[in-house]
Amino acid sequence: MSTSFSRARRRNMGIAATAVAFVVFILPFLFTFLMAVKTKKEAALFLFSWPSEWHFWANLTEVIKARNYMLLLAYFNSTVITVAAVAGLVVFGAMVGYVLQRRPSGWNRVIYAGVLMGLMVPPAVVPTIWVLQGLGLFKTIHGMVLIQVAYGLAFSVLLYRSFIGTIPRDLDEAAIIDGAKPLAIFFKVILPLLKPVTVTLIVVQSIAIFNDFTNPLYYLPGKDNVTVQLTLFNFQSQFQSQFNLLFMNILLVTIPPLLVFIFFNRQIVAGMTAGAVKG
Amino acid sequence: MTASSSSVVLKNLAKSFGAVDIIKGIDLVIEPGEFCVFVGPSGCGKSTLLRLISGLEEATSGTIEIAGRVVTDAEPSERGIAMVFQSYALYPHLTVRQNIGFGLSLAKRPKAEIEAKVQAAASVLQLGPLLDRKPKALSGGQRQRVAIGRAMVRDPAVFLLDEPLSNLDAALRAQMRIELTDLHKKLGATMIYVTHDQVEAMTMADKIVVLNAGRIEQVGSPMELYNHPVSPFVAGFIGSPKMNLITGPAAAALGCTTYGIRPEHLDLSTTEGQWQGRIRHVERLGAESVLYLQTEAMGELVIRLPGQDCPAPGSIAFVTPRAGRSFRF
Ligand SMILES: Nc1ncnc2c1ncn2[C@@H]1O[C@H](COP(=O)(O)OP(=O)(O)OP(=O)(O)O)[C@@H](O)[C@H]1O
Ligand SMILES: [Mg+2]
Image (cartoon, rainbow over all chains, first blue to last red; front, side, top):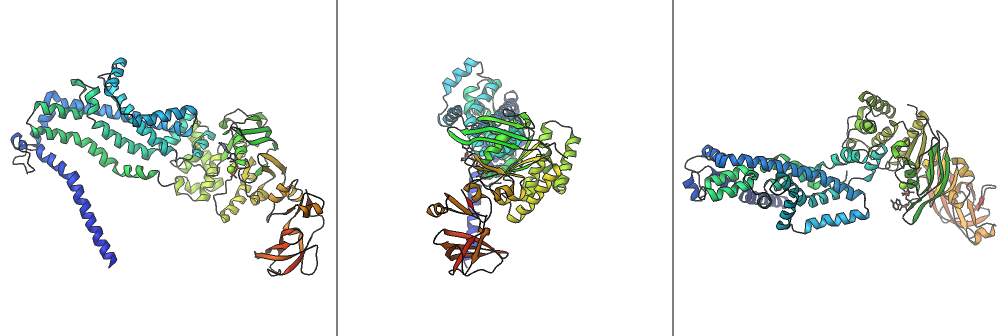
């Protein structure tokens, strides 16, 4: 009796969860896709309807060709910024987290307080631009990379620091006895063990940085510096009523993060539970 | 693989953490090829002393000589030592083969040489079929052997082992005790072994160093320590069950501050003897029995008798210390 009841209940819960997931995740995506393949006129109606004519290829090529292939340039810029910034976040985050966790000296406490500040204090745009201008980094891709690293570093340092706390110090000492210098200990013993956190960090940060809209808007103006999210902004002003193209653009911009997510999905879950169980 | 064995000489070695003195001036000579065991209660500084020798911890004062060379300020890897940790400290992301060869590959030795040394260590330790496994897929005893293998390929002059058997169950511990003793004979290397288990100390050591609160209480062979303990601390630490140690007026009446007599050196009788008491508790172990006798004169005494025949709890009994077997401190 009770088992059949709970089984039915479990099934109902499953159906409910699937329905919610469908409404929240699949419907918007479906809507975007349907809009993207419609004609200009039909799209302007904003109806959740099956397109009367399929304009997939026409819309696709038009979006890509728009403004002298701006979307491709944006893909390139965003990819460069994302890869460089995430690489920086992983290497520096892990190194700083390692030193903070393993060598508690007076200075490290000050640095740790600084890291916590980095999480709490909201970034101020105008002074940041002054600093960038002073350093000659304003409107440059590497300047943008540094901004993204600076904004994300506090989080990644904290994540790595707490995970490194679960790695026994004996391992470091065994490596010291085996003749490893500090850099070798870090790269050959510690960093490989941080893989679960690293994967999580890569996914979370690369999606955030690739999809970033406001920071490139403030710190990276200029036609040559366009990033993917800004191509939407450009479209909206130029094709005021061409919603089919706008949605096609959205679709194209959504795909890379989606691929990253699907590809790393399994590891992310593993990474989030990794610290929980000893072994 | 015979390592050249070396002596270890500690001179007035001390270590403080901040204001707390943990090791308080240790002078010790360990001969080449000796199996030396540090024993003492928890927190007495055994691990710290071992880590000072290994170089993982810096000495506050004093000197350390290994193989006649002063290494007090040398890097751990330059001291000619290898260490086996209580937790084994195997690298979880590397296979057994890579774990054992890690130090050699760091030193950029040729691949063939690394492989040969790993194979040699694996055959001594019977790790051959496990070389491609990760530590996760090994049992406790196998992990232990990998940790020893990793120490062996370094060809160390001195092996340092910090409670290597404490994570194993009793049966495996007994087996590993024998294997380690055999390995010591085979390699001929100097070994320094930390334990708080006096059975391990008695069965494996050539020389036992009893530590108490950062100082050496006594140094000697197992039988020297058993037969001639210099202090009540050593007397109580070596031997199982523990020696009966009587203090206070009862000891003063016998002309000392602490009177000691081992449980196996008390003779029991139901009719007559030096001290009378009531048997409070009996533990029968088959080959021997342990009795707890509550006496008027000496407080509670533990008595060890061979065999299973002994008086029932609650009955009156007499004990007499065997002549020449008691200690007065
Ligand atoms: N890094 C450290 N900082 C401060 N105190 C320490 C440090 N390492 C050890 N101690 C202290 O030194 C004392 C001796 O520690 P040690 O680990 O050498 O004991 P032990 O004899 O090995 O004990 P056990 O049998 O429990 O392993 C302990 O009181 C411990 O708290
Ligand atoms: Mg210890």
